[in-house]
Amino acid sequence: MPDAGLYVDYHPVLVQGTDAPATIIAKLKETDEMGYDAIILARGGGSFEDLFCFNDEALIYTIYNMKTFLISGIGHEQDFTLTDFVADRRAATPTAAVELITPDIKDIKEAIDELQIDLQDAILSCLERKKMAFDYYSQRLFKYMDKLSAIEIKIDSYISSIGASISHQCERYKDQIEHDLSKMKLNLDLRLNKSQMLYKRLNTLLEAYSAENVLKRGYTLVMQDGKLVKSKAELKHQPFDVRFADGIIKAIERDANE
Image 1 (cartoon, rainbow, N blue to C red):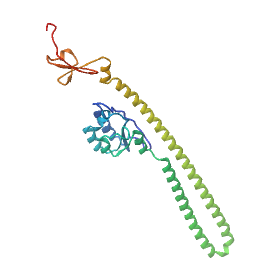
Image 2 (cartoon, rainbow, N blue to C red):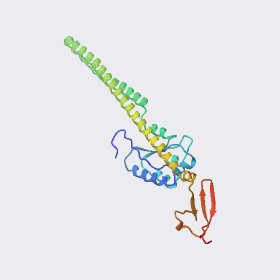
Image 3 (cartoon, rainbow, N blue to C red):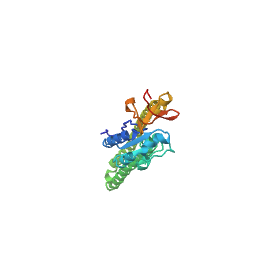
Image 4 (tube, one colour):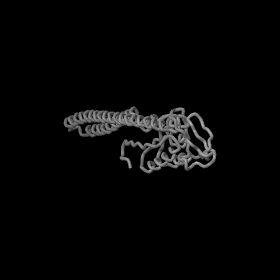
């Protein structure tokens, strides 16, 4: 289970092709049991066919039944898949999905400022009430006025000192939090950029070894009864299709004597 605080894990899966839904489902079920605060399911943009695996029925039911908050960040802003409609939140892009779970430094600064003011007001109000009580009893103890006046001066000095100390500590804590948040955001940006570069490299390799690109290099695919024929022994004495990069022809196997 992840430690408390900001913690980010990356779980690569296939995001394109017929095998993609099964790998995504397996990884979502695994991470759903790991106690994360949120899960982001994301990939970069692509054609309708590239994103079609995110419309898989089994994947949709898996996301619907997850107990962990899930953000769907598939493709570009104009792209929509069925995962966007069953996820707990839809983000326009993968970067927008990360921004949804990243604290806004401006909001945290404002919250700290408000807490600082409230804390100062509460302490000063409490000290003021004590001072008022002191004044009341000092009037009743008139014969000790000189001593009480000296004590009152000390209390005023303590009030000013405490107020200044509280203000200084709050400013120091605020600066430290701002520094930590900036550092965490930079770390997240670096890791996200690294993942995006890795995705682009893997996607380039995937496209290079796709069936269409293999056919363009001069290879052919033999299909019979809707199945890929991997060896001559698998051929039946029936017509079969030979697929080239630019089209398909019908063929039939014949013995040399024929």
